Image (cartoon, rainbow, N blue to C red):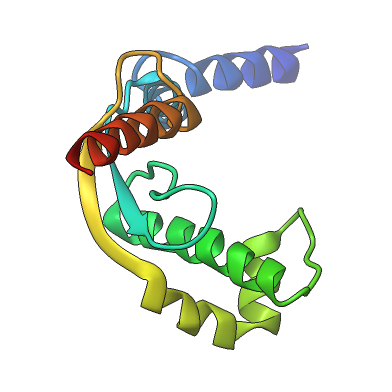
Length: 138
């Protein structure tokens, strides 16, 4: 019985307020629940949307734009593509399309999402504002 008591005490120490496991768990919870409102979008000149979905970094915004523009290029050429793991499939099978997509990708902008707004909701709102401004300028 003494060995079981020792095991219980050692396991209790794993989760006390100073243990590394406890601190790591708290950090993970914090990172998943914090608000990320500053993100980045890339302008695209072909495809359904004129901007990529907001992403956490400029590099990720470019990757999202590559996927978006490449989708339009593949569709225009009649090439079918998977809906799952699209980015990996695209880069493994059509690196030439990814390279070509850069001809249609423009500037990267830093944007701020509203509290509770999803990335897709932001893009829908942002693109409709840009469209209204373009119509007023014409």
